Length: 256
Image (cartoon, rainbow, N blue to C red; front, side, top):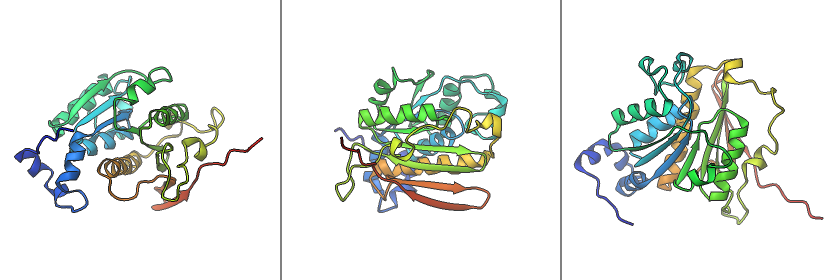
């Protein structure tokens, strides 16, 4: 694999990363080579894209077929008032280029579905989920498992959020197969049981907290540092300012 040296400007831009022994120049090179696909340039996608771009991820793919609306701006801070009516992928890409012109942006103004998900995902090293519904999460998790691509996935609602990392095609240190999304959530909730943000509301800063945690997990996966949230669901209660962790494992298949 060809390694492009970091330029003098990049060395200065990422100097605080490079000072960290856990990251260093080698870790920054990994970030520069990485290709990350982000599903959604909305509430969760906003901090994911901003922090991965700032971190120096070489290529960011953005999948979103929506346009910016005024009601988005309370939480989707990658967009601006001037962006209203513009495709989200274009608005987000423009913000990323202003933040870090070293990052390549692949605009994908389409809806990911069961027909195109596997082909899209296979082009990238890592996927981060910024979707806002269970159907998209199941579809994305299944496709990433088939493509053997790690997935950082999250969910938010009102004042609460959760984050986990999925690598079900690998085993843990004790030889146990890592869990799937369906081990965590065997079935989606009945339609209408979980209201959308448009129906129930959401505090804007919440997506900043959860999306930034997703970006942190992505950086850990790319650089190989720390312990990703594989088999652990991190829960955040914004009103109580409390984090909790749930451990989950691969479900045993019943024989016969």
